Image (cartoon, rainbow, N blue to C red; front, side, top):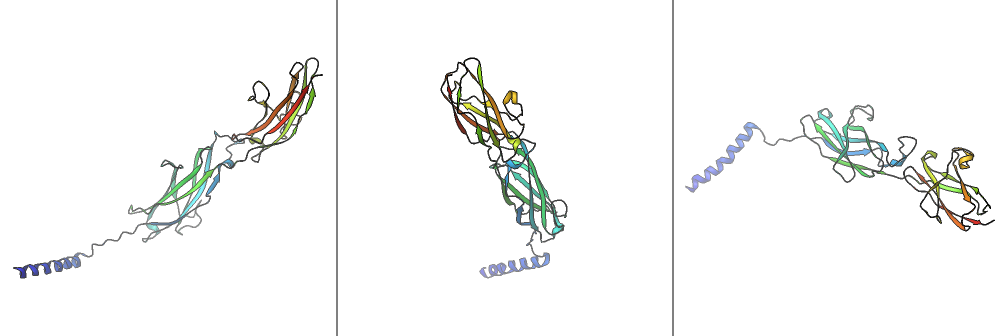
Length: 279
């Protein structure tokens, strides 16, 4: 009985080998696309250099543009590729902000057709206040609906805008009150912003020794001498006419000058003291 059992065990592998020879190998090798590398035109974008209009604002909706290219191969040839897709995610989120396709056709963003480098333009709109690392995921699909590896890269959006600068303050240090009516004094200061004159939103001072030290008194660059004391409009010199009534308390008053741009960045401060005396 043991002898027959041994013969059966020997025959089974032989029959299996014959079946494999008859029907061929069961080892089916699938050829899938492969993304080996990817490149972005910009890895750091300063959104404060993007102007949707003449002025900046934190409430702006801005357009972000970048270029992405990826090297893709397929053992069945590039002709076997159906598409190459990209998806961009908001910082620290799985929410897509943009998606599209890359092409290897030698047109628009792509340089050379059929070189295995697929390229495309990334373009989407976000609020200016959104910053951080934006993840870009790439994946290819062939005509057999086989998917490649997922290749990830990223670029960072930051706000690098610089605040305005004020300088060259002109204001009296001492003044004498009139016996009746009021005395008018002129104060002016120069303001500059690296993002341009139109990014200067406000130039003002606060009277720190008044009943409301948070109140802003605005200096203007409007060329209206009679109302603001400003002689030339839009020359970067901001002026104000300050009226001192005859019955105000004579003492030293502190004035703090400052400017703000349209992205809410604050300038340096200039502290000026005006000593008011009785006639």
